Image 1 (cartoon, rainbow, N blue to C red):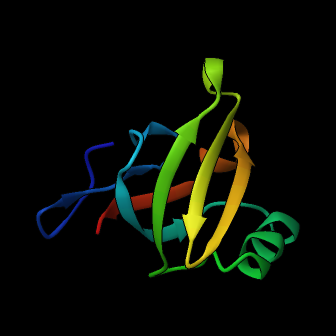
Image 2 (tube, helix red, strand yellow):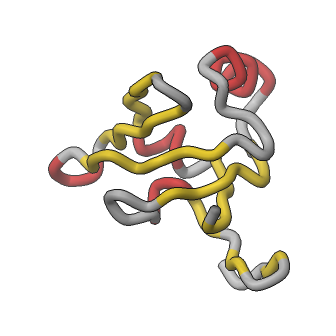
Image 3 (cartoon, one colour):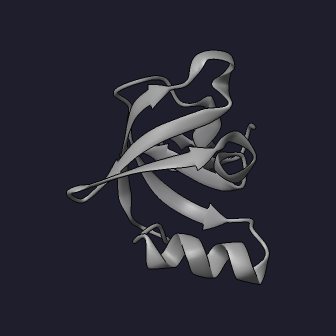
Length: 84
């Protein structure tokens, strides 16, 4: 994506490399999934760390605060982030 916010390029969480620290700018999920993500603490302005990608990128493990969460790739595609 080529949208820019200041110096940081907006991209999807699924496209971030391991150990990247990013900040959520938008959740493009439907209401049900958005509510589930928010219940995990994933919302606008939240800082996340990418811990691991599963082989074939079917899931992504992230750290939110002190919690570790595994998201499906299709869920991570709906989360827009910038470098924190």
